[in-house]
Amino acid sequence: MSNSYVESVGSRLERLVQAFQNMAPTSRLKLLSSYASKLPPLPERYQGHGFFQDEDCKTPFYIALEQHQNIHLFFDAPKDALLIWAFGGMLYELIEDASREEVLALSPDFYKALGLEALLSEMRLRTLGVMLMKVKVELKKLPAPTLEVNT
Image (tube, rainbow, N blue to C red):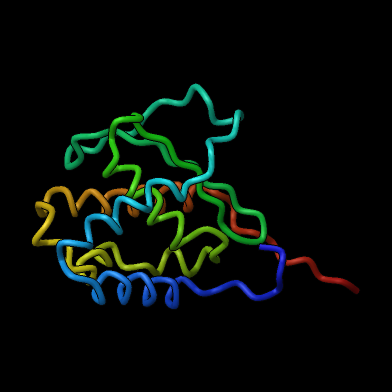
């Protein structure tokens, strides 16, 4: 973000949880699916990647991270996997421009507070936790940013 204030992951998560909890359970699926369109296009430098597939996830996905001052998430999945795209969009909304520490502190079961268990199976919901785990694995592979000291 270009401004000096970046909203914390905690406040984004709180807003996300409130949005889901404040609507009727039947409307939550529509809100969830709206996250699929929130992802930016995959940059050319990440084209031709391989997909990650966890034994808990039926659908493979791709996550790449870059860290400058803050985290930038890049995502891809098969085009017909709307739920996976929605989960990717939700993660993007939560962690784009967040700090390394905030992302690593995000609970792997944050999705339990969204109230989606009546609409999606536990296995489907765990996919969101697996995707966050993959984000954290990729983040730990990145070198920690160094602080610039002006003298």
